[in-house]
Length: 104
Image 1 (cartoon, helix red, strand yellow):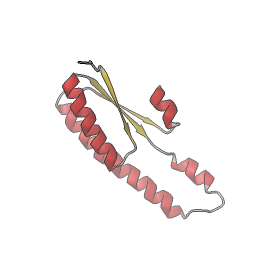
Image 2 (cartoon, rainbow, N blue to C red):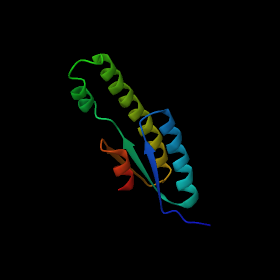
Image 3 (tube, rainbow, N blue to C red):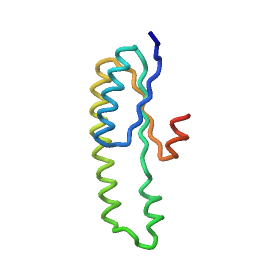
């Protein structure tokens, strides 16, 4: 049986990410591994810059920001609960290119 010392879960701050973290926690427990959670987020400031010509309503950016914040709160609850159970979790947040961040 293979031994996994580190497990990486990619989070996009949504409901699917919450499930992915739950599965990552299960794997970390099973293999006595460290869990790394990489939150990949889009930068709303960059989106606003791209919207300089007013192509999209500003409310879309506000809704995006609010949904990101809510997802972050929910994911933090999941991670906090697992930390209490002794799972080693390292959280990282990045607004960079997702492929480059995953490779790092």
